[in-house]
Image (cartoon, rainbow, N blue to C red; front, side, top):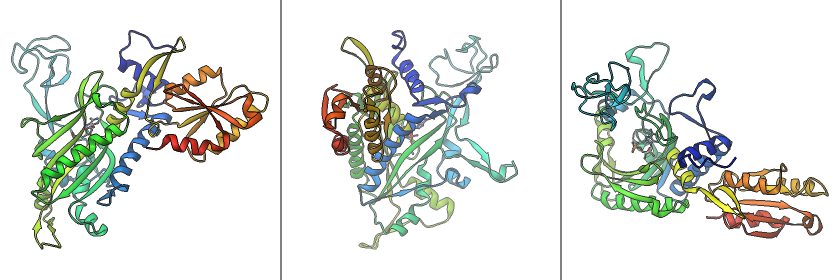
Amino acid sequence: MPPNPNDTVMDKLVSLAKRRGFVFQSSEIYGGLGSVWDYGPLGVELKKNIKERWWRSMVHKREDIEGLDAAILMHPKVWEASGHVAGFTDPLVDCKHCKNRFRADDPRIKGTPGEPSAQCPVCGSKGTLTAPRMFNLMFKTFIGPVEEVAAVVYLRPETAQGIYVNYLNVLQSSRQKVPFGIAQIGKAFRNEITPGNFIFRTREFEQMEMQFFVKPGTDNEWFEFWRQERMKWLVGLGVRPEKLRFHRHTKEELAHYAKDAYDIQYEFPFGWQEFEGVHNRTNFDLSRHQEFSGKKLEYLDPTTSERFIPYVVETSAGADRTALVVLVDAYREEEVEGEKRVVLRLHPALAPLKAAVFPLVNKDGMPELARRVFDELRRHYNVFYDDGGSIGRRYRRQDEAGTPFGITVDGQSTQDGTVTVRDRDTLKQDRVAADRLVAYLGEKLKG
Ligand code: GAP
């Protein structure tokens, strides 16, 4: 079906994501669960490719960064030390009439909440909004069989703390020296009050975080280094550079732990928004954990015999938000040979499917050869076999899925063993020997 011209880009993307199996609403058959999403067959590949590329660039390609996978549940004192119990809050107001709840800074609220003139943005009542109250964004649950205060634990709202509490374990077991980093990918949870914009702000999401431990006094330099590195990495994903920018935090915007911070923003259809951050967290977290745990978290410099608590430069990305950036940036509606097509111009390394194999017609030995080509390719790449419908329709289906190459076995193939390879973006067709396809794709998918 062609896209409805009245739909916004986000409407179209959400619909394509569902239709093609990128993202589904969680528990959809029960009416859905607010701001929680599931990744379908294509979405899980896309997100996995993003995470793997991040992991390779952070952990495998660098000698000074180690990987970690800490548990989601942590000792409750972690969140007291980190400041999240006291400070990870949003001011909320309730409407006493319609019972809706809003962030106190919701732009739809007219007037000052708590005062008689303030009007509820949903039911329109005047004077029914309460004064703002602080609401903690951490999800609580219970550990063990009893639901009592002593058993309360939190679902982590950031993965970073799992790194801080393990920093000495990693340092000692890996024999790293400061400066060095620890990288982690994992789920985080926040009971967001105003979630929305599809997978942009959700209550369960994945972070890709790296904490780089440095000697105090060298932190500004490392902060600058990581800021540049992260932008380079994002441009390397094929995201259009003119859609990316930095936003430096003002004093008012800085988190309680930060001395300096930059957001990396993307120009979404709903405006410029942050999807990654680079933060100079000083020695705030490690000092607090030292204080709350009573365990020394100092580093002893083996060359100078100095002792210090390292400063931390953090790079913090959301895997889901990065996936949204990649999808939005890749989405195009184009006219090709007088026909409209929707295409995801995904970087080949991120594309869920690397190629699709088509027999031109289902006879004359073409399906047999196409299956052989497919079987050989899938030993190396995630590829798809499709023999349904006209060849044009099969190409269009793969365009929408972002598959970079379409391989067609035709009449000539059964004669000379060559196939055509259609490039999703240029639409150029190359004739390639079937037994050279693995190497051909390998070359094209590099980088
Ligand atoms: N450890 C630092 C930290 O958590 P943050 O700016 O609160 O910093 C980092 O979050 C990144 O995590 C964000 O840039 C975003 O990509 C992602 N993120 C945060 N909250 C999110 C949410 N509710 N839904 C989806 N992604 C979120």
